[in-house]
Amino acid sequence: MRLSFAYQTPVRQLQKIMNSLDFAKCLAYARIEPIGDKRGDFQAASIVAAVKNSIGGNRVSINDQLLNFNPQQQQTQDEMYNLVLQTLPKE
Image 1 (cartoon, rainbow, N blue to C red):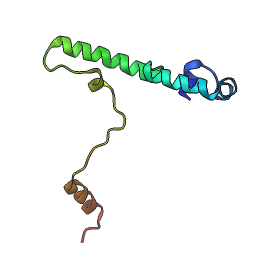
Image 2 (tube, rainbow, N blue to C red):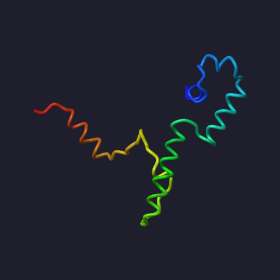
Image 3 (tube, rainbow, N blue to C red):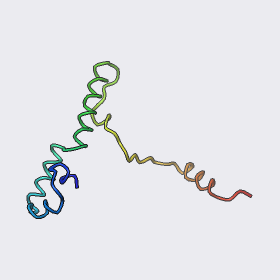
Image 4 (spheres, rainbow, N blue to C red):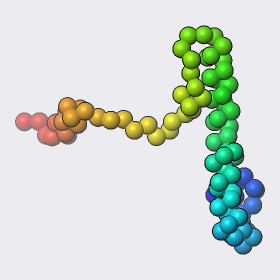
């Protein structure tokens, strides 16, 4: 879908005009040189990192500034236990 959006071509048309080798090349290129929204995220993170690093203090990397829409928090056993207790009916 992203490829379709990037090339402004419907998916069905891309399936007709691209073979699997062309598709694999596009995927490999997208890993090296991101296109679309992902590229914009890297550009914004690059600017934020440059500004923060120019101010001073702890140096930050571009990866530190990227948005993470699916953070995975690790819960301790106590936190999981307390969540289970909250769901149980109270006597």
